[in-house]
Amino acid sequence: MALSGIDAVVFGVADPDAAQRLLDDWGLVRSSAAPVPLCYATRDGGEVIVHPAQAPDLPPAIEPGSTLRELVWGAPDAASLAESVARLRAGGIACAAGPDGAVRLRDPNGMALALRVSRRRPVAVAATPANGPGAPQRIDRRAPVHARAAPATLGHVVLFAADFAAMRDFYTRHLGFVVSDEYPGHGVFLRCAARGPHHNLFLLNRPGRPGVNHVAFTVADIHEVIGGGIAMSRRGWKTEIGPGRHPISSAYFWYFHNPLGPPLEYYADDDFCTDAWQPGTFERRPELFAEWAIAGGIDGATRRQARATEESGRGHA
Ligand SMILES: [Fe+2]
Image 1: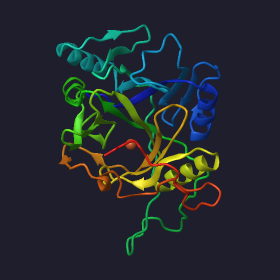
Image 2: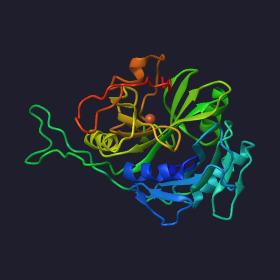
Image 3: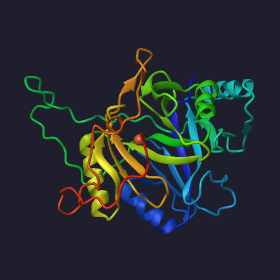
Image 4: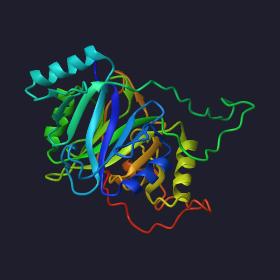
């Protein structure tokens, strides 16, 4: 059995107080009262753990500044974990079991990875049914307006690959990830298993400069993307880009700058794949990153488009 998704993300940050304000506003639940590290959880128990950047027990950063220091992947059970580890070792990848039960290794970017039996509890978060002409699916029921988001899961991480071919090979051949869609030579969308959401990991080619592009959280539907994003804007957090919609993966998105370092994303309604999914290959074009997107976001007070003050420099696609 393959890995089942992201179990935890561990950050090292320059300003833990600002990180705490962000995590409270993002809609996560604090899972430990200890001041260090900050521990928060998604609705399914996915963990966001934040240490001061200089904490001695953190793995080294792959880029300057506040950023992701360890990416923890969950396996559905102990047998699956053992299978993943055996596959890594058979491929010549060094990995070591720690006292916490996790197996640790590095990807070709130098990012610290941990594999463990997943501690997440599966959640089923129903999207609001939509009414089509002559095909109502939501009858005698209003659609929601969300006062804030409550992220359900850690959906995906996007990494800049210093050696794109090596990273693609590592995650597909050694960790068993499946290609969902691809910009050949530039970017590849990967899911942990044949059956699952469109991507748990997206790799972007950035020769010689490893990094973390963003970390993304699932929410129920477009209404929660919008309500969550407006709540973040109202609390003063700056949009990186969004709201908008990705044609590849079909998801609605909204990205925010934040003190964890890489942008954080709310997203909803991504494609769900099985063995029958047909991977596509695409040429890199801005309209494939976003069918549409609002630069600057939506002002939290007026609920109108905010004036864009900066261009997104992320170069997503
Ligand atoms: Fe994303």
